[in-house]
Image 1 (spheres, rainbow, N blue to C red):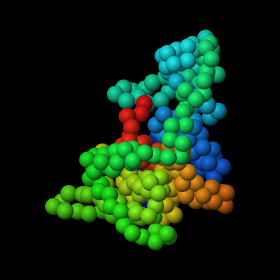
Image 2 (cartoon, rainbow, N blue to C red):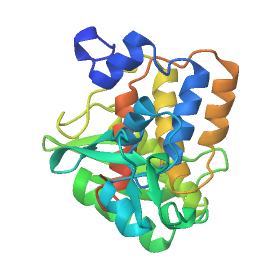
Image 3 (cartoon, rainbow, N blue to C red):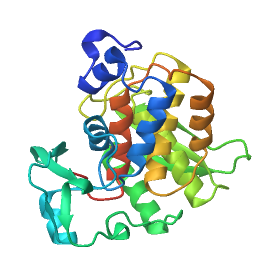
Length: 268
């Protein structure tokens, strides 16, 4: 499937394409900056929070506010709805809807990577990629203008994928490159062996596919406090153009969530 048909639209993409929400460069930039602030919440849920309450800074369930910060929910506070693993929905509250004990910002949103990722973190990603999605990782001696690539292979009617990354890059740059290539994969740019794993691509143009992959890489890296080249790409594009390409915002968010889940527990 190469084009976006009306009957292919999911709820978020219908909001994105039909209503026009976030299609302006300014609105899209605001959205991804918002999602960056919530590394402990899945990208999909972060977007749901932004739709419901754009100014939110810190959110948690009533139980989490009480247990971690000794804060209680104000009377008549309005809960925000997010999706919950192994259940339909969960309710969270923004800090302005709580009262009580002192709130220590660093406890809720710690700067846990400080711009670096450990070797064990990196190896966990590679191991889970192979086991979960049949993606093998290789490093090659390439020039400074080459970062990486991903290709699909079919052997005995089984799909597998190969990510090749420039071995001369730093570990953090390799991570950013892998995130970009997996953005292509999980957004369906290489097709899909099973729609239960990830959706087929709806981005019609090369520009749109690159924008999706760069958005995934930026989101994954920024939420891990890793600066990466995707920031320059996105900022340059969004400052230059009034509209973003026709992409699937849902595919971008789900792709970022899949990558994050490979190196940590499943997010709520």
